[in-house]
Length: 141
Image 1 (cartoon, rainbow, N blue to C red):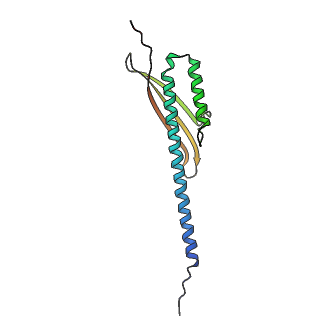
Image 2 (image 1 turned 180 degrees about the vertical axis):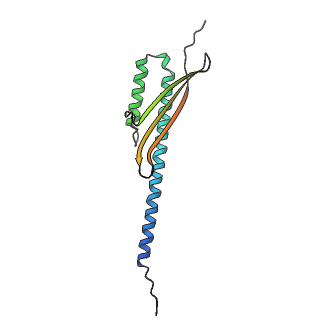
């Protein structure tokens, strides 16, 4: 009795395994790419906010507030994947000042963002902190 091998369904099964694996790899790389993108944007936002707060001694408080609002509007409206910074459930920031000596003050801004929700991973949670030297007025005796 002669055995006949049927290989018609083998290529279909191999293709199904391969396409499933390739889709999984693609989703993982998309998640990593979005996480890196959000991290870069959040780092730049924290840097810009720290720079604005470092110069706050030389301007009125409403001017600083206006600059921060403009900055948040800019980051919400620019880029291929927008940061939802106007939503307090997804974005928050805190400003902390430290005085090391009479002539050295530092401003630290910590931003946290909860990005998009991805299957198998959950919601992206990203944080960034930037410290900037604070410009203080010097009184010459």
